[in-house]
Image 1 (cartoon, one colour):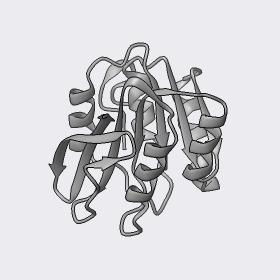
Image 2 (cartoon, rainbow, N blue to C red):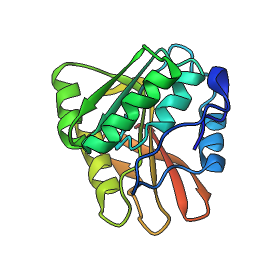
Image 3 (tube, rainbow, N blue to C red):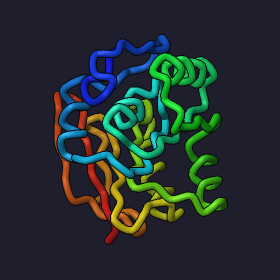
Length: 179
């Protein structure tokens, strides 16, 4: 696993055992769609190795917040941040649901919220519902869910509306914005 673009292009990243990292073709497509990362506040839920948030940092994101509940993943994200010497980031240890509620309570908002929960557990739908209920998305922001092709997500969830989907093998990226 590596960073594929930006200031840290080619940097090899550590990855905890037992996670399913985002494939390079899906990662490249995601950032091609999102475009310029400058001045973006980015949140990665279910961060795993942190590869998506690290890519955003390499492309110039102003700040990236990683949320991860597994200690082994938390430790790997910290190691990857130190390896790349990124300082404009933070890691929140805990479940995505609690992190979302905490961000809302602290009035934290993000321009881009990306989440890639473990497949086959209905977590993508549940997280999307929570994000649609707890307003932590900036007015012109996007929510991107990475999910298994057979996990169907709703077109509308709270104030979020699906506006684009892209498929890469068994992986789907679903893009939401405000209704």
